[in-house]
Image (cartoon, rainbow, N blue to C red):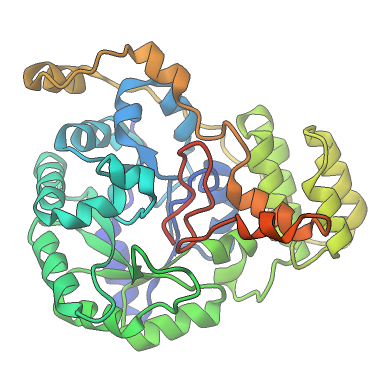
Length: 410
């Protein structure tokens, strides 16, 4: 089946006519799943991204596709973000996911060492001609109404011309919009986002620009828009801690937790324990005492115990909220054709020795709980030696890693 499409270009045009901007939920591995997208859409998120998906695994492995992509009829506007380092993978993955999304996005922002070593993420910024080739090829082969975009970082915190030149080169490929994270790849999260650079980039290109970085409240988003005149504002860490951010809530309201509980119960086995539990942990950070946060983070891995804990320690019954009882459509049973991918790899002789089955059995981005969640547990563990706490390194918010799987490039 083909989901009803939303035209992303029209969304930007409509926002501009109203002198406002699009509010976006960033692509976050582990966390930008269907269920979380459903939650943030009830709080003013205009456009959501999937988790970042490895394009080669998506093309080769049915297991990867089942793990990384689910959707339903209400899950729109939606953009699938891929990590790719060659045109065949990016084009083939885009064609396969086309019936179920409104656009695709290429990740050129991840600064993780493993990703850069394999030519993914920020490594691509060294070869803008390759980025342009991937984007241009997908643009030419997909309907004009289908969004094709890219997420990049600043090439320099001082020489803005370098990044502007790259963005103009990418604009020339015909992409719908681009997202710019306002830091360079080596810069840590304690370095403020370079808004003046984002402002200059916006003034230098003709397509919509989305600004990303340091968005933790609606006021932050409004200030970013006011200073840069960007066409969209994207948040990752902020919306994890407060899914109601774009509705103007300074911290997570109890009703939001109640909505998440309802979504998780409906999803049942479609949502993993890790995903369900971690979101509860992040969004209740402002609602629970340190002791209760510690208890929640260390519950045994049984969903009903998490539900019971939440219902015991929060006044959910006192919350009157029509959305918290909402029934969501069942997920769509997606089917994919590997024909074009197989033909392209055969013609280019790039097929690897491992079988599709081997790829599928190895692909599991949730094999462990991840350093981002683990770092939260460490913060609450008063018995943790200082040396161990210091070992949780953070490079611009992405060193919350495990087993090679990415969190997000904010």
